[in-house]
Image 1: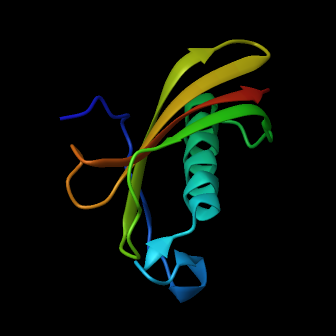
Image 2: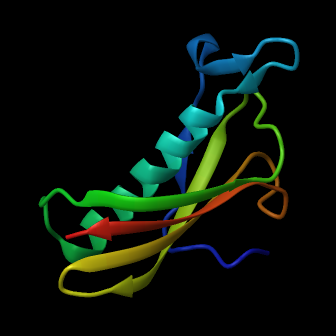
Amino acid sequence: MKDIGEHVYYMSPSEKHMGNPAIRAIHGGVVTIFMERVAEIELSDRTKSAMAATLINSNVDFLRSAKLEPLFGSAKIVKLGRRLAVIDVLAWQGKIDVLVAKATLSLKL
């Protein structure tokens, strides 16, 4: 089992999220935004603050096509400083051991 964070988040995609109709895959931009949102929610929960964080950098590795099926995600805060947070995010469908994508995000606090 992968090293996931404390919470697991869920997205139920619709037809409007489709990027490749030939294989009925979720658009990569939708996967990326989902992962960014997972990181933001996890950070907000950890800091107990409604303060908006600003994305500085994101590095997303797409490991396989995300089918038009439920998408799950989990975040783990790697570093939380006064001005910067670094967060790792995993996204999967079905089995957690078969990742769709993984990302590292840097956010300005």
